[in-house]
Length: 400
Image (cartoon, rainbow, N blue to C red; front, side):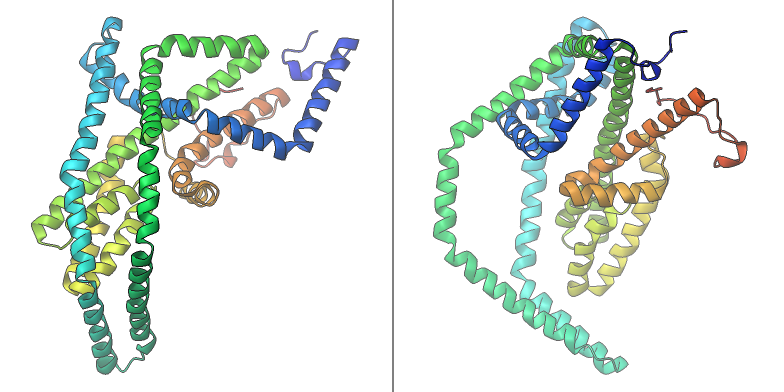
């Protein structure tokens, strides 16, 4: 009887053996020339960067196009172009509001903070010396560190003053390339518009190519895995952006009502940092807490309590409703994804690591289930987390 899976098929003909030899030769060539291959791929990606940017922009804006098209416009095919226009208008409006309303306040807060920084440092030194006298503690290293900090600021100011001519020349050269930059931006925007408008046909062409190149079972498994990964990444990024915006706006409003200083600057930092799962809010709040500690310790304490309350509110109520339950995974794997992603790809890796690990986790579960079915082995009931076999998430598609 012919095996159901092509992996179980034994090579019988000369063609089968030649195909195996060809695969081995290709694998050896890839491994032995991996450095050259990665360099060539990097060169190709650099030349295609505007089109890759168009793909990224289209992918991000599609999270707006789909709900606008399905909810507001009833999913009528003839109105997809209107959904695309509305998505770009909303994105442009968000950028305009960020530039016209938020950034000036943030810039004013930053300028005020650095203008008064020497006084803040002196106040912090006085607080440390008072604590040293009151509680009989040796805080001399911290006081000296603040002295060194003042010296560091003076050195940095001198370096920036000396580099002013070089910075002016760099800016002039950058503005000289403004036409090329504008062309790249136009290419990215225009490419994303065409991709969103022709999304159905482009995806159909990709599916046809995959089914033409790979065996049918492998092609369907790959396409199912891509659908599963798309659900995870799209829901995570869209939900996380909305969740972070809510956190930043709520923090700004409450800090303003309580009269805490530098509310615009601190809330924007916290909003961007909260894109990092698990402890991003605390990372973003740490600089604000230190700044308020030097200015007014009472405000720093109030701010710390506010951040803890906001994080609890976000984790228990806001995030589950905005992001849904598809991102449920052990906190250990979330931490693992953040650390590994941040080590390999920086801040972007810390954000994208969570949906990536969720996708790989779902793939591994499906592969193990498929392998157990082939062997006729099934996990005992006691091996599962709840004492019985766990059901798959609704959005988890069989990939193998």
